[in-house]
Image (cartoon, rainbow, N blue to C red; front, side, top):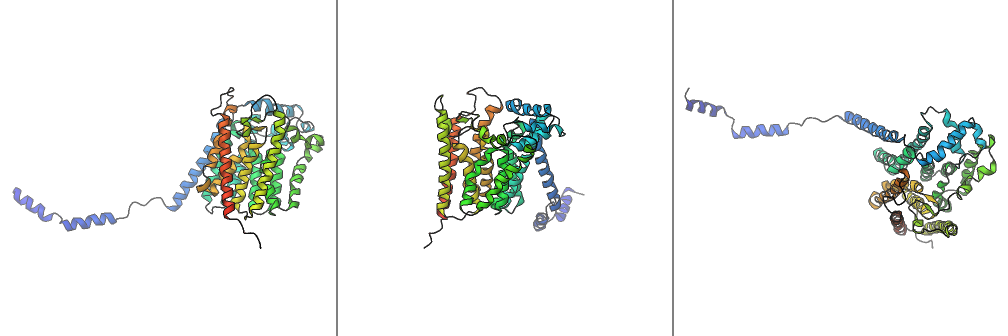
Length: 423
């Protein structure tokens, strides 16, 4: 066949432009390769979520071997005393400056299946990390129907640097009173005042720092959301938890004054806390300033309560959380002898509030967490004097700025929704 004949034959059999257009359209209209089914997608989500949780616990386990000065000077000595006394007999003595419920744990610790006392103490605190995250989930779920938003809030709190360090590295127990305090807030939001007071009593029985929520509780009482008689549950729970120690032979007077004795341990105005007393440094007049600082704190608390009562606004869930967050920052910011760890409740509550008001207050937990973390680091790593990554006075100023901005938002919101005076 000649070359011209071959070309003519190929041309005759070649598809026309119209046929090519039809073929291209058919290819374009052909459905793309199907992605994973909805059931498979859910399996992926569950698996990834489980991996995140496992990694969160893995981070904590990696820190379990670290020993701090607090463990050596306090917790280990308490454990050794319990072992020397044969267990429950140790409850007769005031071997710890913590209240009775934590002493019960120390008595049980030698009998728990843990590799070391240090691991047991940290595991107990991590347990309350979980409970804290649980109540964060429940509180955020009241605002957002999507369980994934609530789960994101709970996981974020669970992985806050100060939350992880406090329990898994420092072997501290601030998660304990915070978990019960969040339980109290949850039941306040659910309008179950008796349960709220029970949980507040549990928080107070473990740590005096539960009083950081006292302004919120007082506001709820003054506005009738918590009946006065429900407050009886707080001392009832507190005293009920003292009963086992009393039966073991502990001194009633010493049990009832354990917190009073704590207030006189530290003469300093501040112990690395990012609060107002970072600006007051010296060798003389500190004791006089401490008394004035306590009175100033009371003044500010009652002023806060008065302003809320005068505002005549409906206490929605969001406003309750705003008052709670202000309380958790204000009280340790003004009270003397505060440790760096005492903004732990503020770290958590401001983050919860940010999930309620993400557009308005998203930055507040970032500032509060940054201040807390920067105060943690020198104490965790035994930094020498002057070795703090950020000057504590700068951190105190940032904490004050967060408090002012939070109060400013509350004033704006309360004035905007103020109910008219009855005629």
